[in-house]
Image (tube, rainbow, N blue to C red; front, side, top):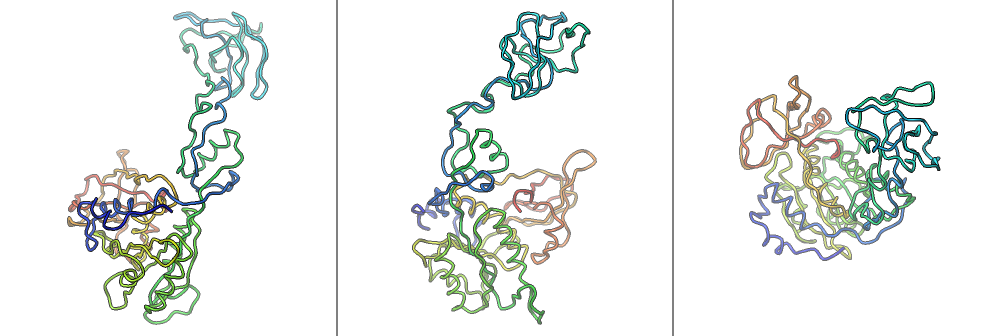
Length: 431
């Protein structure tokens, strides 16, 4: 990776930087500078079918025109649009037939048309297609077109109207979605050069953690964070290295951090980031590297440590998420996911927010960003409306299953009255 700016350099450029009480917007700006750029070193060539979710390694210029020729946009009859006249109908003789994949190699003469199918090459002498349902087919091999049904040039796809040969088709940093893969296939490309996968290690911390399948015991909880967070990582198509849970033992935690940092680009943990007697992550991070911040003015997710581990040949980023399940997921969505996308080499893009009308009063005090689990639906008036899932406790994981988005109540907002607009971050694309 390329050189990353120091904490002092970043802090000097940011107003309001306070590692003990950072607002969400400042934390997001901080991470955009703190994350290594322009992305990962190294790339590989993959078949298109294996490249979903990967990041394009270099600009890709179209080697051909798409479409490669003028063609019909629908089933109908092709003819010269110059024959159309305002207020006048038109009668044309059918000179032949053209199907997609088999060009008609003759030239239409004045007064003629060609029966043509969707995608077929437009014949010489024609620039307009009338849909078959708009013509009257006569017994003597002619068609009749009523007056003023269409304009010259209608229903023709022009050569290169999608992409022109020699123009930029996809830019480096583009994450390859299904549409992007289809576009590459339309250029005749069977493989694509992508950046290597990001390597991320994850492990849970805390003496209270039990692995699923183990017998229950008093004061213990089963490790749900491992499954939610690792699933969120796999949705990003990163290489996930899962570690066993680590108890509240500073020596074991230090060994786990050092071991992980030597293998990966980023380390994610959950639990142990607050200020209790058993919360060891922050002092360990201070000793093994540097702490960028450890407290965010947000709910849920206030204790969140971010820094660099200097245990390997190059620094690994550390994201210490809170232990409560909802807080861990919300912190990942709001802060960690965009940072990892940037580390993958992708272009930084803000997560889009939808506007919906709140169906209920939302209690909040200014001075922190709140993410309340919401259920968005279409109201009787045709507008989007949203209500909460009820109990907003950071340990109520079932609420994340009920919700389809997060109601984002921004830092300076206070209580929102029922009927007022709010912004919602939808889970589709983020989970």
